[in-house]
Length: 436
Image (cartoon, rainbow, N blue to C red):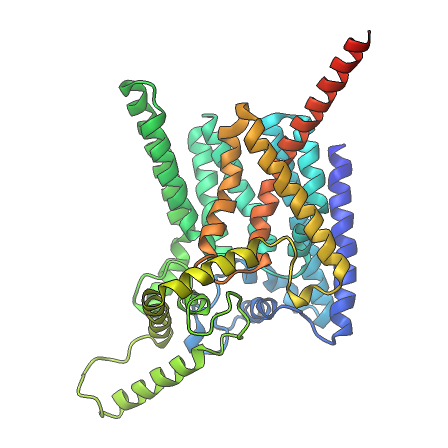
């Protein structure tokens, strides 16, 4: 049955890849999403041995490197052949994600929960889309699932050092794929420390629990640090500063917090152009000796990022009611069952996304409410939902940003479906006994 579910997941994604490629071809384009093109440009530059920048030396820390690096060998092929090959790699990664969802549910609640979780993950349109759109979520999803499974194994106190390393490496690679994951380890550490402080029955047990926890966090942190270190060294050489992810954080923050913001990223980052023009004018005056300051002209990309970030924070502080209203709008845009992105195409795609999404969320809620014996383990798989919900009431909101969290939530939903089936069986058995 497990193999059948994985085969179906693979076939669904292959079929979707053909359908999607046909829709894109009818538009006479290679991609429907702007981000896909940026990843592809960077992948081509890696493949050709050119500097890793998107549009010149002022965009050298534009995107995190792992997904373009994975795509780079494929760009040697021609046009649509290369793009479709990239979609098929996404298909393989998406099928792997379904397998990891099943493994996680199996480890928590057994075979029946794993089968339900696998079915949900294999048919969920959001997960299928993230496999074939040529977006970094294709690689990000299996990495965060691996990270969460490693933390689950740590909770079971099995091969602590090994699983701490696996969790740290997987988390570091996930951050190098999608920078938005960088704050998740901090949220996890705080939650674990607080639970260690308040869940110990007596002082000695509490101290032992915390000591063990700090050891795991230390190994995890070291593994994550070493995984990300090459990227950090490279960024420091370019900017002369520590840049943990990319220099698009300021633009992303301003995208969500500025006059006229809608909660979505619907302006093509055009708002950054006046900032760029003003900064270049200042640099021209400085180079021409028209400014009294003798400061050297610093890394342009870093300063532009800082200026956008500061402007967003200032605007939010001065317009708190608008910022709060936008937070609610972003939350609704991200978690609304009905997807609104025009790139998705027909109404049936939206209907399928909505129906399966509601089923997954409902079953996950049922599991958290009813399945007490697994509640502590299930919270590991709920954590991405909480994390991305908090993150995207600050940054822009979109259905795209919930998809990794909903895929992970299939683990919990599978447990809820298995619990519900068991209750139905018990009720039927009691009814049969009563009739006798």
